[in-house]
Image (tube, rainbow, N blue to C red; front, top):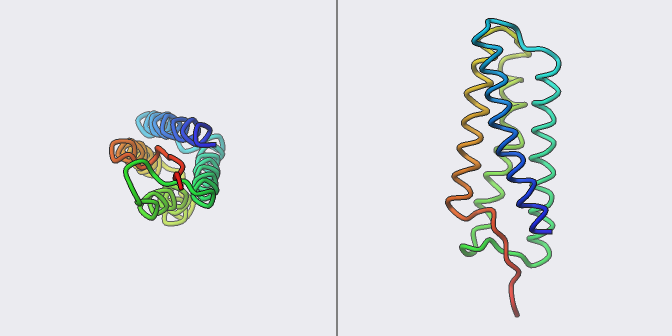
Length: 131
């Protein structure tokens, strides 16, 4: 299960970069955000929710993060990644203009950097405890 978790985490990091580039291109062209982007953004939130759920299942099964007892930090990071994109959507009240596209692009690229930071801090490599 940890291998699936790590694969999905890699996928969400690359997906976040792609989402940021997509929104950045929309903003640079002065185009409004389309329904395709909204679907991709909510897919991103659902993907992060699935990763968080897998992390919870691993932790309940006795798994700990490789760098020690830092599961709480992992869960806080993942909760942030789950709610931040829909949260920005809510804060912007569904705006779809150029400025909103740029805001989503910056946030998606920031999320990718947060995910990369989680790798650097070894918050996404799980091991099972040995009794």
